[in-house]
Amino acid sequence: MMLRTCRVLCSQAGPSAGGWQPLSFDGGAFHLKGTGELTRALLVLRLCAWPPLVTHGLALQAWSQRLLGSRLSGALLRASIYGQFVAGETAEEVKGCVQQLQTLGLQPLLAVPTEEEPDSAVKTGEAWYEGNFSAMLRCVDLSRGLLETPGPTGNILMQLKVTALTSARLCELTSWIRKPGASLELSPERLAEAMDSGRDLQVSCLNAEQNQHLRASLSRLHRVVKHARAQHVRLLVDAEYTFLNPALSLLVDALAMRWNSPGEGGPWVWNTYQAYLKDTHERLRRAAEAADRAGLAFGVKLVRGAYLDKEREVAQHHGTEDPTQPDYEATSQSYSRCLELMLTQVSHRGPMCHLMVASHNEESVRQATKRMWELGIPLDGPVCFGQLLGMCDHVSLALGQAGYAVYKSIPYGSLEEVIPYLIRRAQENRSVLQGARREQKLLSQELRRRVLGRGLRVPH
Image (cartoon, rainbow, N blue to C red; front, side, top):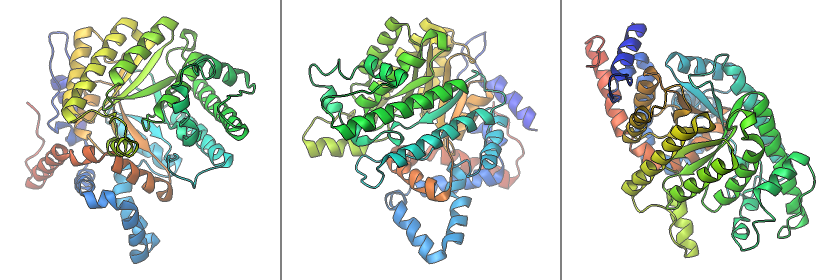
């Protein structure tokens, strides 16, 4: 039955040599999932679309533990939110989740649920960052060990959060980076040389302790990428808040100079670009042109962005211009322009340019697949798609069954580690969660069909 469904989906949805055939995201691929999975997905997505649950998630979790006890509260979380969005706690649990995804034509994009919040004073000290460094190395090994046979593009991908390895406060030196004359002292070339040689780096605007932390941070980043390269795992660096991103891009540029050279075999370090920021298209254009001039491979994860409310609050607090697009339509237009720019780059540079279309928006995905067909970019080429585990499965499954490379962003770890991480992600992605109404509708339709016993519905 599953094989029959796969054949139908592939024949109906995939691009063909005879002409463009748009993908259908009508939930037809839900036939590949069990009734229990669909029921949990519907209930959890409805819960996550309820604003009080997202806003007061940590307080509600603490209240649940006091009222029900840790064991029962944990069991409820594992059966609902944790089970929906997390691969598991042990390597075996993660492997089971990934194997299930692979049977559906999907690939894993593992994410260590560890990071530093810019306004947090709790997570400090080199020991904390060194612990995160060890977790990143284990994630590299797990990513490699999970996939004996890589996906359609041959790529094993993993997310990397820079503020898990270096202080967010140190990244705020971006205000100094923008000053005239500062570019030579904190240039990608100088940072790359310091990473590769291990020699001390003295930056005049930093005190002795900050310089020491910068050296340790550069060493951690360099060693993570070196290990990932040896294991054939490509690292997708997450974007963060606007006031951190210039420093993150500087670090990515430094790593790219060392690890994205043609002789290394394509981009091992990718940066993330957030289309909801006003200057993203211009920054992306400049970065792509700079990589081309330098002869470096270029890897990009393109997202809409997740820190809208926080960005606007910060801008209002400091009396500065709001860096974000005025509305969702403007953000979608920005995403479309950035997508067109990158697909054109891919068509010109081939395997030297890689792109992840990280979007839950059906129109953006349709635009990407159509332009890939028009530009002659093969399905097994350097373009892939990404969505969150447990969300947007009607899009992910349709893409995967049509032969595209699709990755699901997968956090893993204990309840204590992951639940706060999930709540932060939910708070940052309110619009995505509240906008999942179409997915809820498709889930409801499929569950009603099963209850009424109408048999397997073959898409037309």
